[in-house]
Image 1: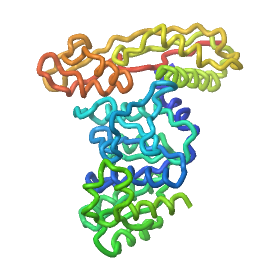
Image 2: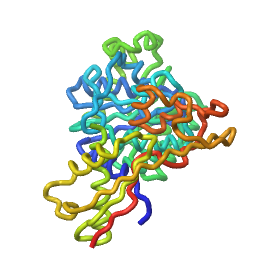
Image 3: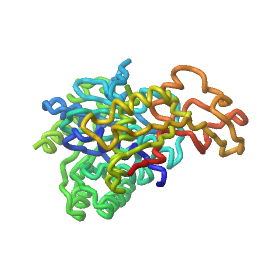
Image 4: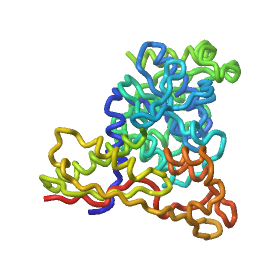
Length: 244
Length: 136
């Protein structure tokens, strides 16, 4: 018998009670995945849904800063039980690494990601929001391979530099047969024509745009203020669309 | 405890192997636990026993063998091979707990004893693996 990795069964077991997985992706770093993922989780929880947020950007986790995590830590019961932050159950590598850099090569990223998926104990959950790692490397490939039921929310913005990467991301998901929930234009400064057109080209829904919001930076770390910003309002509307 | 989740995964994997290979009664399983993850052998044996379902006859009489595998690390920049206890950063509860939950966090805490690089390969003894499912 070849050596078997039991964590693969562990991933299935740990996610067995999760009804829906929404993975916020976009391919490009700096596109706002973490702010959108964190605020979306807050907005879904605000709607009364049992919501989890899993920060799987393992080398650059920052959702804990956006949520204003404070001193909370996961408890170790049946796996790792994510603590509740403003109504959202939240798991991140930042609990353990703190501010230390964790320089990981591709296979190591993959192993860390599988380990966290195999021990994160979400329990009954309506929606698990995943903050995807940037790029289309090992971590993204593993998520697509292991979370076949996940729906991908692909972030775009009006920059041609970003749109090119978003096109690659959409092609990646199409080729791997993953389900794209839709395209959202983030940091939008006007009519989202290019992002809408890209969504139409790939035959996926265009779910709206989140405006560029200069007030957002000052609201990071404060869930209530975050939801009250213009960007927060747009993400709440996105949550309503996704929950419908 | 965190070990229960890993033990449940081992039990599920052993049963998947039994189903695939048409094993009616599992007589033994061999699990290796990497030193890096610092899971206690007795604790894991208890966790495995706890996670075998009461109504699962195929595993009821299985001998559980757990081997602790030494962690072997090799620095990529300078090539030095080293053991866990030789790595600066190994001592301390924070590092041990972090690596226990996510072994790759060794790269956040440990350094090569030769050149202090965090860029090392874990060539053995990382985490939990299933090496044999025996039965009839």
